[in-house]
Length: 59
Image (tube, rainbow, N blue to C red; front, side, top):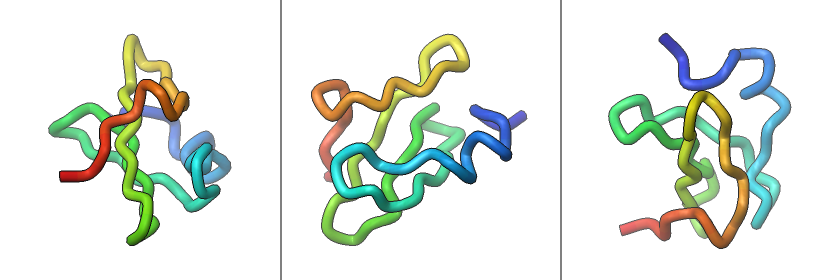
């Protein structure tokens, strides 16, 4: 089961760099696809939390 609706994922973008996001089902996050950014945003109660302050930095 997807974390967010596919139609919503198509229009969501990283708030920091505006790159598209992809789902990481195992971590329950939306991850920025940019090579330079790569922030991971949590999905809580089926709601993406697209706040840079809440994002996890890439490892």
